[in-house]
Each structure stands twice: as structure tokens, then as C-alpha cells.
Image (cartoon, rainbow over all chains, first blue to last red; front, side, top):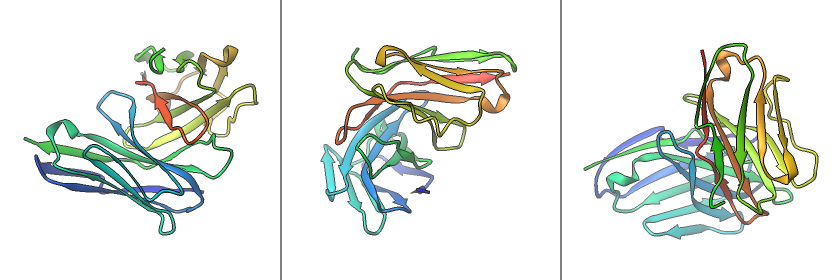
Length: 114
Length: 113
């Protein structure tokens, strides 16, 4: 059974710092990995989607990497801002038809202070 | 629509009552998923619909939970005889074939008192 772990569970940084969120998964037979952001009381917003054949994806100040063989992904946030404060969730999709249920980690709660 | 719409956004119900949660997926998305997020827990898969195929119900926690998807679009998640442990945020997501990702709704926060 796939298990997804995110470290740290919570992180507090001053504005402007670069930071890394970690995600690990136990079964490397994945189709893709997706990073989401969740604001309090809101649904999930997709940030980056990495296919298993890819090593990284970038969007603005965000960069996500994937090392499938070691079962790890990182989300790098450059020059953090207070608006980045949210819970960040990592989710993996198993090999299959392409339609698949995601297994989620419990998230990293990020607080960026002005 | 422009996004996945869920209603109601909040629901408070008495223990033992039945509740219905609604999800309107993005038009044209063939896959629809229900997840549950309990306090301090990760997202838990409940059920998955794909086109006209039989749904994957493997995540439903008990026979009090059921879901249907009418006309390949709107879905309703029904919880019968609600219990306090059913209190959670219920999230719906829709999507198309990979490599495209999922789009989530804002969820329904269910509180059973």
C-alpha cells in the first residue's frame, strides 16, 4: 500500500527566505506526482504536476523535483511571501490507465511572516 | 462551469440524520472523485466515477456511505445515520485522462452534533 510522508509537518519562516518542502513515498511505481496548496477553509489548488518520466517542473517561484527511484519529491519556494502561507500537500498517482486515485500526504503547514 | 462546485459549503446535522452532499464537476471532465479530510489527517479516498464504468467504491468506510453520478455529470454523496466520526471536510475533484491533473472543489464541511 502506497504511503506518502511529508516533512516537516509545519514550518515558519520570515518573508524573503527560500525554503524546501519534502515529500517521500514508499512505492516508486507511480504515474505522476502532484503538489497542491490548501488555504484554510478552502479546497485544493493544483500547483505543479510531474509525470513519472520527468525530473522537475517549474512555475514562477515554485520548483518541484522528482526522484522516483528514491521515492522523493521536493517543492522549492523562492523568495517566500506572506501570501504563500498555506498547507502544501503532495499526492502520488499509481501506474495504471491514467485515471487513478491519488494518495495524499498529511501536508506541511507553512507560515511566512512579514 | 469554470470550476468544481460543491454544495452546501457547510452542513451541521444531528447524529442519526441523513445528509446529501452535491458536486458539480467541470463540464467535460469524465472522472469524478470524492475524498474526505478529517482534522489532522490527510485526504482519504472515498469513491471514483469514470464515464459509464462501474464506480470504484473501495474507499467508502461503511455501508452508510453511498454515491451516485447522474448523467455523467453531477454527483451526490449520501451519508445515512450520520455519526460524529463522519465530521470532516468532503472534497470533490474532477479530471480528464492523464497527464492532466485534478481540479478540486472548495469542499463541504460536515459537522455532526
